[in-house]
Length: 416
Ligand code: EPU
Image (cartoon, rainbow, N blue to C red):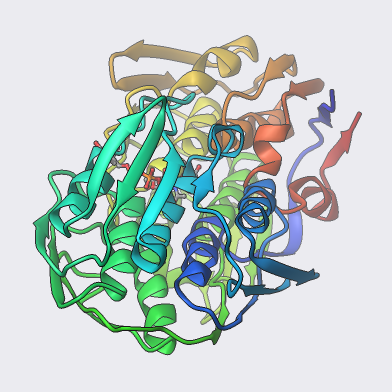
């Protein structure tokens, strides 16, 4: 199995361009099921979760053409509404097909995702919302079997603001009969982007990006062209890697607007930042960062998807900080691996107390999930000696050529 070998060799320096956002591209790809006309998507990241979702669409009968970062999906000839466990277990984002399939075809048969390395990942909000829209749903042999001759607009309030549940319900409501009002919606920028796409397909959606979203269902949606926005988590990951290695980098093709809290924490850690409309420059002046306290919470607060990377930064920083994970119950799997590299981290429930060390040592470690892999890479870049990271397929789920990009910034990194 492929591994990544990193030999810690000092600061990352130079310029790096970020890819389109995986978590924005996944709902856009799912939305292609809502129309018989082609959807043209650009800036699609070359990551494994996208490949998985496109394979799934092909299984359902969609025609998929991909050339570099351009993608066309044509869902005129869908012949199946069955989304198998084999794909869903590797990518929980497949649950995003539930709403569009049900809305357009009146039925869906989607595997339950089950748990994963970061927690139990329930889908009760997705199901309750679709039931409120008149769907008849039962669970049979691990599958969500859903039926509704036509979904009806409904008033539904989420108990927990869930990103993919909000996206699923917006897509379902876009083709429902009547008006839906969704309350306590997630505010993540990927939701606003999905609403922009649906509007360009003829959908009537108001309020995306706020906690109350109103959707007036239409009978049909048409094809459209859409560009996937830049990946805010990939952007943050490069910035933290530069901060941890005392480097100086410029991240391009990004959008600083969606990284408010992450940038604030990097400044608090002592990095100097300059921002442009689509770039961010980070300079540490060659200095070691200060440890910073982190509390993850739904957008616009600090993202859980950046928690592991800041854990690595804190492990190398001056001082002690706490990292509190409030979104997922088990998103500390990287801690034991960072400890193998000499990190001083104490776990107390949802809180990690991190006492910074001047140096970490390279060691063989294992990636346990996507963002945990990024945290191990950051630690390895700043560590003394060699680190081999096992199970790098987790990394390839969500980072487009991260090893090539880091090598261009001066890292000694290769696949073995
Ligand atoms: N939740 C429920 N019931 C539900 C759905 C969610 O209780 O039906 C809870 C979850 O257990 C969690 C909280 O709600 O405690 C928030 O989870 P959410 O549903 O928002 O997460 P998600 O939609 O499954 C997306 C991203 C994740 C990211 C989270 C949080 C996609 C495809 N995935 O997941 O991305 O961590 O939002 O921001 O958009 C990643 O990219 O590494 C990743 C895991």
